[in-house]
Amino acid sequence: GENVEQHPSTLSVQEGDSAVIKCTYSDSASNYFPWYKQELGKGPQLIIDIRSNVGEKKDQRIAVTLNKTAKHFSLHITETQPEDSAVYFCAAKITSGTYKYIFGTGTRLKVLA
Amino acid sequence: ETGVTQTPRHLVMGMTNKKSLKCEQHLGHNAMYWYKQSAKKPLELMFVYNFKEQTENNSVPSRFSPECPNSSHLFLHLHTLQPEDSALYLCASSQELTSGASYEQYFGPGTRLTVT
Image 1: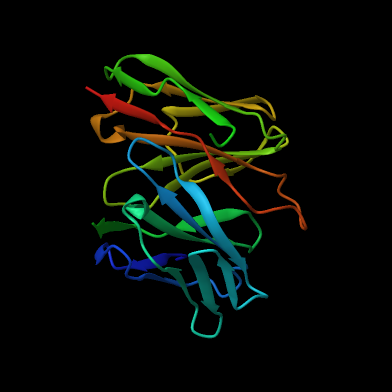
Image 2: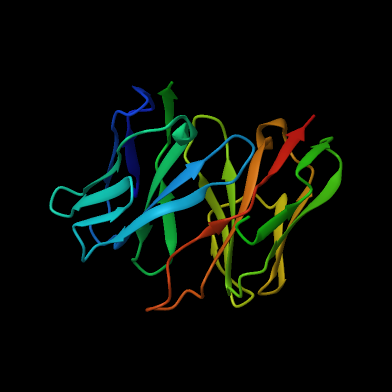
């Protein structure tokens, strides 16, 4: 079935270091890959996304890369800050016949001051 | 604030109760979604509405009954739930589900539901 695998499940980094979270999707027809940040007591917030016709997208300290051949996409956060601590989710939009978003299981990122 | 509000934020109900969750979006979107978020599991899509019409029911038990009276409002009616239904229920919205529309989804803060 359709699924998205996300690794690692937890990640601790020192403030100022980089963090990388990776996802693999199964549906080769997927064409849209968003990343969400969820803080305690809040809903997921879209932080960056990428479409399948683009290999990389950057927004200040956040970047996403996509490898369609390998069906991998990754979130890169540089110069991490304590306020980056949250749970991050990747997702893939399924395009075959319907509009569905399949989510990864989440990565809990802790940035240590 | 994402422009999507949900009420109540917390709900405790017994297995024989009937309650409703409400979602409202102020973004001018025409697609709305219900998701279930349980610990250690991916977000599970429950229902999708596009222009008030249900386009997706992800094999959700009938004790969950959605209602979408207009593109700005979405309800989830709950009846005779089970303790395993305890979870965070998230509403989201996006532009209409047509080719060329934006795919961006915006989530509300969720309703934390506890079934006793």
